Image 1 (spheres, rainbow, N blue to C red):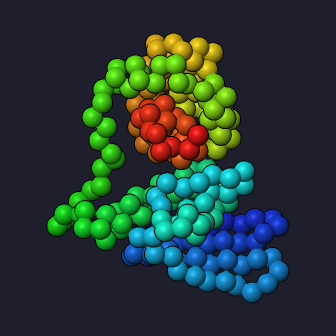
Image 2 (cartoon, rainbow, N blue to C red):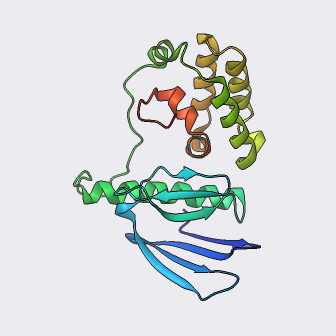
Length: 206
């Protein structure tokens, strides 16, 4: 569990994020200017962040505005991914508790249970695969994750990109994702289109 992240940027200065109970303490020290401190309640954070070319932003559930902006991959990919995974989980837990969805006792929040079988999802997605978005996903994964940890998935994505209408290639990609284990969260963070292929979510960004 990683509750604190300290990031240093050559031009923009230092940022510290610490998850404390039901909020995130943020301390920002620009290269020029005074120290800024603020608290962000976990209940208002959208647990699915938005990636820009230089940052990963957690936005408000209310108006979609960025509330937390993290430098991508700093201070290391491992520390960054661990903190992002913890923040996503805690934001979801706090919101569920606030909304009355958390039962009494120590309850572990499980990922959404997609009732459809892999076979049904493959049939549904056949013919809808966007090769350009697969390329974008591959580039993001190669930039922000350790290549050797996701090689089978990247290879499956390359094969699907070459044959986007081939159901067997899509099935191979789903199997490669299912075999990732703890890396699944990081993959979906940096390459949200993989989630679209997995779940055919009509609300996912296009």
